[in-house]
Amino acid sequence: MKESFVFHSEYIADLPDEYKATFAMYAINYALYNKLPAIEENTLEWALWIKIARRIDQEQEKYESIKAKRALAGKKH
Image 1 (tube, rainbow, N blue to C red):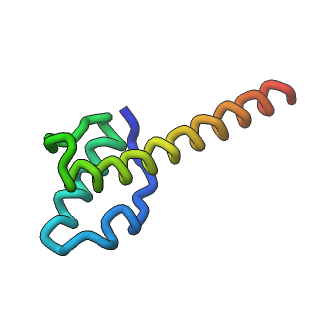
Image 2 (image 1 turned 180 degrees about the vertical axis):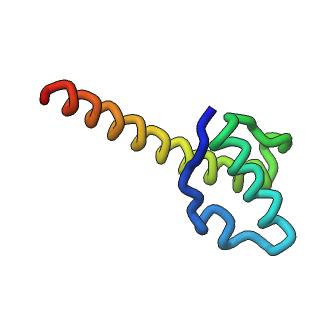
Image 3 (image 1 turned 90 degrees about the vertical axis):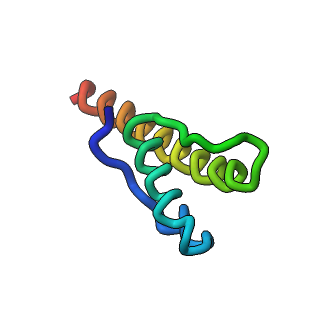
């Protein structure tokens, strides 16, 4: 389990106000606990969610890559 992640305001910036808190919680639960939201696939909500999830996944991959490079550099010294 992760303890933290970077939450980008763009995840929810363009959503109507009534969806912002819900999608913020989707992002938190996905990023920290790898829990997918209970959204029906092939809906507009699902399409919006996929964009957020994709960005979270990209950020996680970037973090893991940097972490591995730093570990390797640490071993060289």
